[in-house]
Image 1 (tube, rainbow, N blue to C red):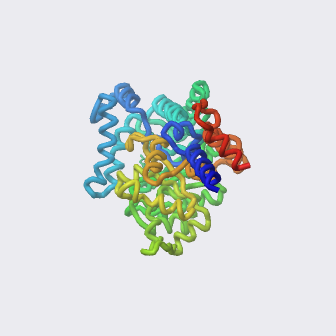
Image 2 (image 1 turned 90 degrees about the vertical axis):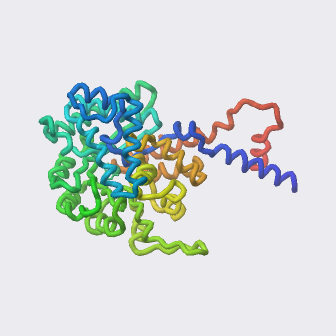
Image 3 (image 1 turned 60 degrees about the vertical axis):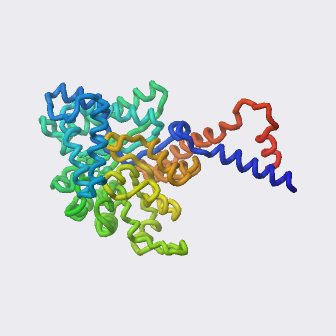
Length: 406
Ligand SMILES: O=c1[nH]cnc2c1ncn2[C@H]1C[C@H](O)[C@@H](CO)O1
Ligand SMILES: [Zn+2]
């Protein structure tokens, strides 16, 4: 009896160890990224080179390391100061957009984005940007979209040559303070199946409710197209409610404030309000971006980030980067922070990843093939690594455990 429990403990230990999410395993695990801004993920070296090429001399730093630190610090500042978080955070994009005004620059940034994500183990990504912010040097909206799409294709090819497979789709964003959403929605529709997979609105949330862009959303619905909406980041439940019930968003960008509609009692029992229930019942995906939320003040720490509770309650949570440059992060790092905060294992990471792939805007059969033929086998392989560890010469934990299980 005692021997049995000893072996059971060993078995649990071995399988627990097999599923542990070390930084190296997180990086090698196949990952899916649904919320990442093209203009928030440039390489610092590239910004400096592009600025020189176009004569932009307003960069705060001209050394790549110092420039990277500047972006991170500038994006951190809002939360530290407790000010108008998101608005200050968004000011940093002036510099990245300034160097993304030519065909070559957009092509390069998009290619490098795909390469960087692939090197981090991302196998599928939807990358968003606002075409209307790249017209200053005379490009048309169509030229912007084509340059970015071609850049993504080039990045996919380079990644493949380096031994990584990645597929990248574009989401076209309209800025919520501006008035071009209908035009951008039509653009997204025109380039559908040509590299663009959906639409989004972004920018300052307070004062710019999603219903300002209702025409664009209704148009996209009539066209059977897909869209996500940044909501519940800097503004609370009304923004989420409008995004879903008025605009019909397929997914929510961030959605952290949904927590305001969930009541946890002292005894640990949980009661969902009507909106939170609806989001969970309808399996509406939440594109959560932990570090970005800390920077804009939408969450106070990784430990307290609503993702912990929402995952426990089986909301359809996904993990994302938002802006890799401003947050000094990668998708692997975001998962690493959550592993440290919540003790997640590879099984949790697989759950988040399958959630994300199910929520992607590409056709169902392609999502399914990604899950069954790329993601699940990738995690299974990582979890099986212990089987091939060199023998230690100690009595075998593995053989005892396997025998016990049979
Ligand atoms: O987290 C965000 N919330 C709202 N807007 C954002 C966020 N991250 C980036 N943006 C804005 C700034 C970019 O210039 C724009 C398009 O990518 O989207
Ligand atoms: Zn965002």
